[in-house]
Image (cartoon, rainbow, N blue to C red):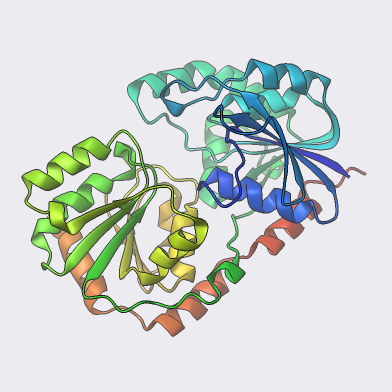
Length: 360
């Protein structure tokens, strides 16, 4: 089959998170037995055409104020002329998924990664104005893939979609990526955060709680975003700058090593459709703390993943972090438990092909 994936990122091997990892893992595995093309956007310094691990990539100039929505007129015009057996659009919150509905195809599939809200007043206003247009895209789709039960319920509630039209297929983890990674001995204990540095992700609460934790506890923050200057300033005000370490643009192997080394991974986000970061932390054997919000509630089992209510209470967060640091499950046991709960990408591909890609 000739399969087209459409999404808002630049499609670069071993870089990016979230939707980028999702698209890359699906496209590259499908490319082993199908003709797979990805329409992506261009940050200005990447080739217009490229073959990446067997995937044909076409990149288009984009306009992305505030790194949002990713409008590309060039992509829109190209999609109007495109003809594929399967067209699979990704991420409701950016224009490329909706533009993908313009292509000629036997089957139109979307993976929405839907949060339901914008993460600023401006973005939330745009999402509300955008809703009628977004509903048309979802109604045109033959199948909609949700990565969690929460996301499916949100799509049904907000758009009145048919229950049977939406299939829940969680994102996967490539277990082979963790082979050979061993936990390194360090002179400190670490709290790890991986994600965009934006307010709704809750990373600021980790800076606030750090002064209340023992001196040997370090906060490691992987990511970039508009909140970083505030985090740097706040850490200085609280006298913990020497205990906060920032990392950006890590190679994939470097990031996975940080998951393996961490003593606890914490994500206090208000909105998540799934969270691949939590999945990867658990596969690494690292216990997690998440907010009891959105799809994150589905991770909470009080064995390897613990939940905390919103709004975040710093005292309760302190107590929970200390509890996890002092009573962590042995890593070998944790890894086995996680791998029984989390699917690999080959399973994801099987589910997508059987539930969504059949054209007869």
